[in-house]
Image (cartoon, rainbow, N blue to C red; front, side, top):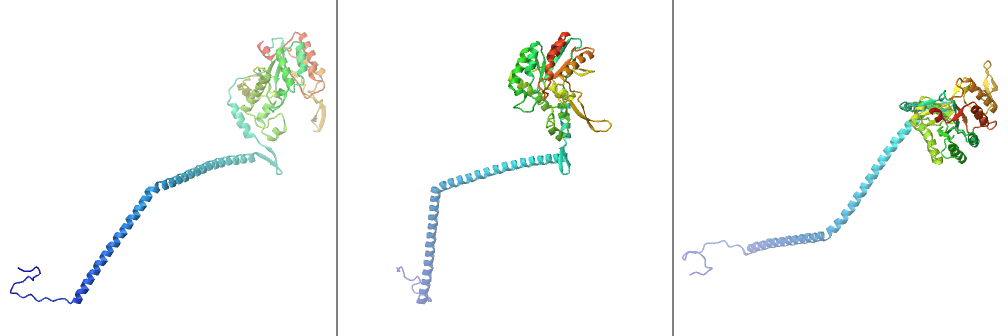
Length: 416
């Protein structure tokens, strides 16, 4: 039996020859091997420690994120939402400003075009603006009125077979209202009064005078009737067709702007409204144009506004049945036919009160039908202050009453 460490060879064999290393070389080999093992172990140690540090760091970061990230992000998101909201508001504001600027640009372009149109209509002499042409405005206004369809009547006289006549008065300033009221009441006579404010203002004028309103109520109680004479007492025909701005501004009987359907309607409706509100009087569907200035367009527009009956006044060879109480000048200037020089002549339309009474009697005598169905015109207050025509009314009424005439309202005259 052999020992555990006995060499493994035959009993009678001798061990082989082996080259034994030098002890010094063996030591070097062992040292190198040990050194490599140490380095390997050291690298593994550092790798494990680094990995441990990384895992620890990631764990810390993860824990921090789990604890603090929601709070941090919530605040951050809130700030971002606020910034987005601010940006949105800024954008909306900018869009609004852009829209406003666009609207202003269009407005300025329209104004510029309007100014160009205005400049093109200016009449200039010696570097001075002397007038402004309103031809286009007149054409536009008349074109609109031409589209109106309305029936109207221009009445100058009632039936010639009826021995009755209508006394009519245009309000004017209203100064003669007390006198006319007392005369009509004394003779138990009814008349037709056409009402106007005589001014374009909405705060003063004939229809804002307390005394005038009181006497209109008294006349209404007498049985008189009331028609419309327009609010501003403009010459409607001239105010419709006048193309010179200079003339419109210069003459008070012309409107500053071109009249159209709306303006003419307003001229009538303002009187109707104010009279009813201040007196309770309802106007008859009768009207009279100031100065008698009418044409088809004017009459048609008034008819569309509710006034189909225009009441003119009667006339014959003597002239109109007009008291001419508004004529104040005895003399006028006119040019001589031959020399062209101005000369002072008697005004053919000026009459003293007695001359007028004589003329009215002549008018009845010259007319084949006399005063039958005739419509006269006078005024309740004019610029004439001396020898006023209203003072001949008592003799006028009594004279023709004695001749068998009755004085009635226009509506009654037309009914008969």
